[in-house]
Image 1 (cartoon, rainbow, N blue to C red):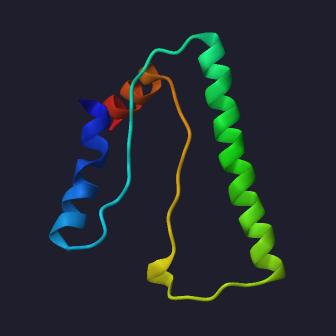
Image 2: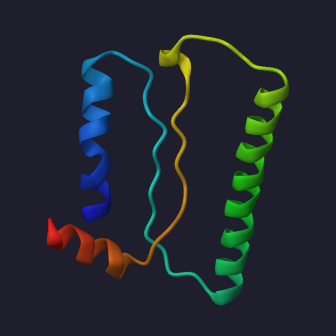
Length: 89
């Protein structure tokens, strides 16, 4: 599927380099309006969690090697927008 193709290359690189496996999970799912609101609330919770950590680091910096930092991404889009974006490439 289009979704799996977007991240299969990263998984291959991780396994070839014998690094920790990336935790990337993508799902295409039809949501009710109630489920969509619940998803929005969960994403907002992640936003607040990350913002809290950033505020905490301003008060008490945490130092370590750059390679140990995590790259975190989250969000959602309509499947049709993802397909249109892929077709433009």
